[in-house]
Amino acid sequence: MSNTKNTWMLLVLLISVFLSLRNPAGGPFYPVFTGRRDSTESFYEEAMAEIPRPDDIVNQTLHLFALRGFNPRETVALLGGHNIGKIGCEFIQNRLYNFSGTGQPDPTISPDALNEMRLNCTESNNSSNDRFHAAMRSRGMGESISFHQRLSSSLSSGAGFDTHYYDSLLKGGGILFADQQLMAEENTARVVRAYASDDGSTFRADFARVMVKLSTLSVLTGSQGQIRLNCSMPVSSK
Image (cartoon, rainbow, N blue to C red):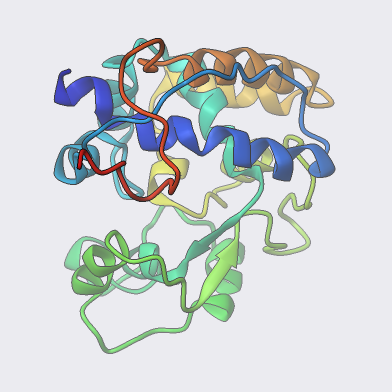
């Protein structure tokens, strides 16, 4: 059993949980197939290296998704899952206060969005780089900002599973650097504009299709792996 095959299993295991949160928010229905089994090992370092990061440039995000068979349109659709949920402020501190060590905010953030993000995420004297790496290893959120947080009257907002994520990107209001980077390349920016151009039906249809694809990615079935009694612990061989 290869390490690569197991790297994204953590992401796949979260899909069923996501379903229960997505439907009340107005997300699309799609089937999630049962019968997948758990790996007998975990590959934390490999997972951290191969799952896209909040501070990745768009080409890196596209590359990592392409390794799993997703094209640019499918990648933009999957990132639309950021319609709902929260992100810890430690993941965006550098964007707001010290982008690339300049002591200035990320210039791709619109002034309105920057002001509102700073209201939700205050500046800290701690090293943003240290906080970021600590956050990648911790379940704690501390200060956080909703992905659907109302940023200002000039920016799209909402708590439902609609197009407000893409509307915000068009106006420089992406919360994560990796989100806003979708506007940095025409092949992804074109998809963002397409998803933002209607009532959300195009995005929801694509999202449902790609989530089915993600949910069947390198799953273990039959005699492969095991069925864990505790999802966080492999079954003892004793």
